[in-house]
Image (cartoon, rainbow, N blue to C red):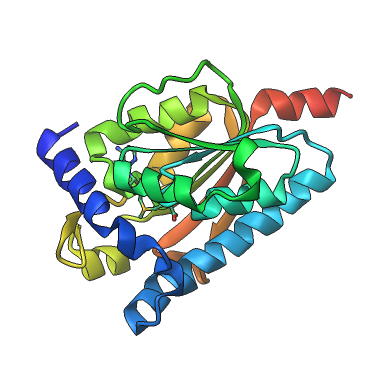
Length: 236
Ligand SMILES: C[S@@+](CC[C@H](N)C(=O)[O-])C[C@H]1O[C@@H](n2cnc3c(N)ncnc32)[C@H](O)[C@@H]1O
């Protein structure tokens, strides 16, 4: 990975970590639009989808929040899945410090560690029943994104949920590849991500745009399921 980009991205997230406390509730209009509106909607979509998995009695015992930031959603996952072990990884020490501070009653089931998601991950193959990766991929330079996706598929046994920013007229026009002028970002496309994840043996179960019509929507959540799991269920 381009070292300057990595250093810049890490320094940025270390420096804004305190601001991320309450980021999603921040009262400014910009934050409400970018984070409360977009991220909260995505999270609601994801939690609804997860409820449908839960109601099919699919065991989700080990969950990874990849690029967990301040652990906000990791905590929510731990609450939603009271029988699961939830682990969050991030490369920002400041984000992880806040994530550990935030963890409350779930303390025994919720843990965090430092990992660089642009590098091979220190987890054995198919460790997690469910891997969730929100708001991260566009921080990885394009030449490393496939590697990141392949690692996420390798460590995932069953379900993978990925949020992407699309290399899309609207997003590109808004960010010009630097998110609001201060951070390099690298949006991608649904097609490219599908190619990589499907070739790793996953099928797309849901495509959840933050709003419709899809062609105008710069942020989508993609919910994948490992094919073998599908086949196993069908064979029952
Ligand atoms: C915009 S925040 C999103 C946090 C969380 N997923 C959420 O949706 O609230 C992006 C996070 O990705 C982390 N990140 C960026 N590049 C990373 C990398 N190469 N390895 C690990 N974490 C990374 C940042 O430190 C930051 O916490």
